[in-house]
Image 1 (cartoon, rainbow, N blue to C red):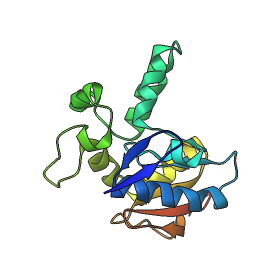
Image 2 (image 1 turned 45 degrees about the vertical axis):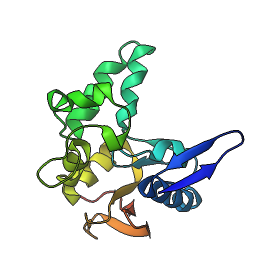
Image 3 (image 1 turned 60 degrees about the horizontal axis):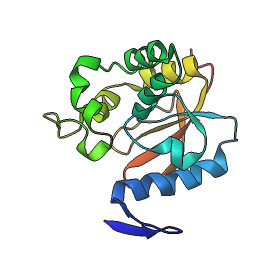
Length: 166
């Protein structure tokens, strides 16, 4: 647990959020400003990276002001094999730490869905969405057939996607 002082605020920052921030700093040096990243959708990489990510849970809010975005967002849920009906608590809560009940594995529903994706699944998503880098959980090793490790932290490992894997 840590606190970070801002211009006029004192903000709580969990160990995991600090890890996202630190890995994002490393990735920002590797990934060009126009490169897209595939990251676990329940984490806060977009804000920390300042780069485009394929899908983040908070993207659902765009449906409030962008007509038709809800269909795109639902397509992303399908891509990541997330059942919208199982995600009810996320509609009420906004942060990963309180968003949904842990599964039998102890992971929150978004994390469990991402962990269930194989290296081949993640490579196919990277290909489909033009992601140059993939961030996986540290205990989710990805195949060297599709990915090359480029950075790591306590909770995450970042990989460069090797295009044309077929």
